[in-house]
Length: 165
Image (cartoon, rainbow, N blue to C red; front, side, top):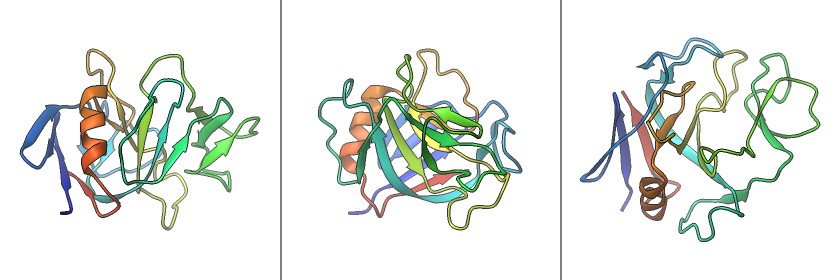
């Protein structure tokens, strides 16, 4: 059975399960440009899962999994040919580090936003990741607790759609 995830305001729904989530500082809307702090409205597929092997021992999911290494990042420089793609440091454009001291990127579900085709400056690195303890607003991602993330991962697959509205 294909599962649908719905995100509305600060609520995250999957099947009959409802949990708290954090979204972009400027809410959910039409994403206009890189750095606008908006979580994009729309229906999106899931690309794959990135995770910290040193912190998450057993991820149960049918999705493709890629361990996060210390030199990994995500390009957020619109003028780079690697814009909105996974990169390795050293990197000579602006990019976000994925290997962090805090736990927000222990597990990242990469949401297929602005990836096919990639439109320069439309927005990058839209993830479903781990929320900060106080569910502090994000730069445009959706964030849920680590406990909820593990539950979601075990139930989703490549056909799962994330509907944000």
